Length: 95
Image 1 (cartoon, rainbow, N blue to C red):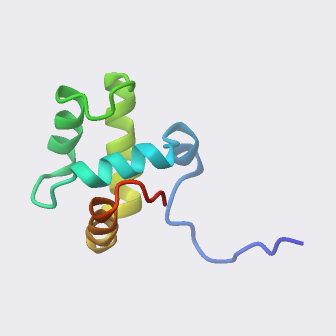
Image 2: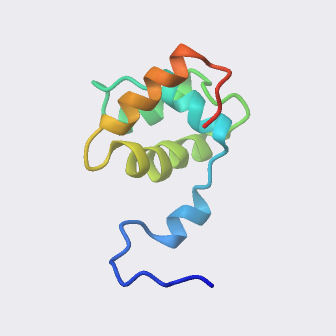
């Protein structure tokens, strides 16, 4: 039996459906992320450098701005920094 939460959601269901990312994509985004780089510029770099090799330009932008940013950078980047350290230490570890 699932119990419904009475708390307010901090994410939108539409955003989760549209911006679903694989664990490999998230790991790759974490490894290449620079905490000094604004998300919009990071999205552009992901596109121009082909960091997500099979992703279209729009998909790469969606993954950074609709998934990576709200999941890992808001309200601050502490979780992204911690996960990046783990991903860099052992790129074979999957989250």
